[in-house]
Figure 1 (tube, rainbow, N blue to C red):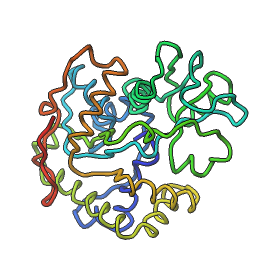
Figure 2 (figure 1 turned 90 degrees about the vertical axis):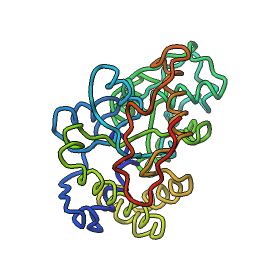
Figure 3 (figure 1 turned 45 degrees about the horizontal axis):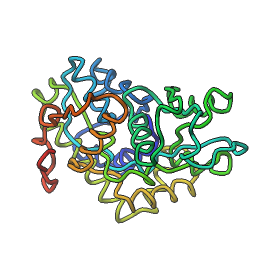
Length: 295
């Protein structure tokens, strides 16, 4: 998982003992650097489960991988923002012509979110340079060194540093309902221990229920486990709950937007459409989580 916003539900589930209740021992929530990095870790057997960019899963399957999408992760892009240095002449997305703009890695949420935002803002993507910089911190380092003029940042880390950078736009200014991440596992685990898959998703569902009814305590857990200032965690928890950031099942409108993002980023050709049924298996969703009609 590349963006810090993804980790909140896992920290809460671990702290409240929901994974333990399901007989699961989670040792650590490991951050990837976006794109296909987490996909590769699950494929290699280093991780039992991974929360990956929807676009990264589609690209990996096209390249021959056999990972199975068993649950939703984030169905909004509420934590994703683009920033510039405080002394930059840039003020908004409309000012990007002739500039260099960073995102994390090819196939990442941030590549697609940038492409959609440019398109919906009426900015011709051919007038600027889009560069993969690595993770969020690598992008900020590149910007501070002058390699890019603007780059991706992510709450709650941005909320803790909002006086250090100039906010150009939030992804939610242009994008709603975006199934940016999904939870994947290996076909071997699905076949050999399907109950474990459902148990994992059940623990996540319980964490989301707790977060909705106990945002202050959830923010405190996130702050302590994620090592971010409490006020930043509180601010981010509030804003992400308001936009219904996280899910357990799948958001059909969000999947459609993910496809739009892949097309805008050049990851799909022309009118090429994704057959989501070849990637997603809803059989393992916990009781009470809706099985949706895939777009």
